[in-house]
Length: 76
Image (cartoon, rainbow, N blue to C red):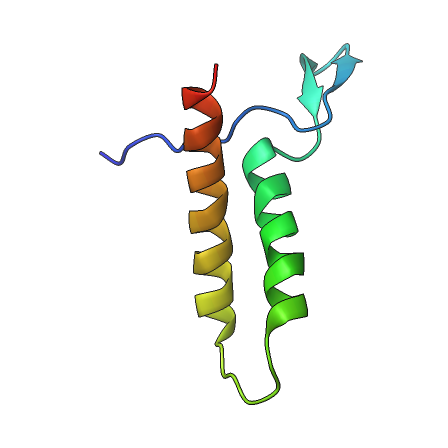
């Protein structure tokens, strides 16, 4: 059994209520939001002579997002 990943909850919560599906919050998670921000910064800083694979970029961005969520928990 794998450990549950902390996704930080919804980044921009928008309540939806659907008669056939129930209710909840739609939108991206804080983890995805942080990873997207890390992706922007990383891609903006990569020099032309640096080689990164798509997998390396994705893993780095989500590790950064996970670290940001962990730091966020400690600051409360």
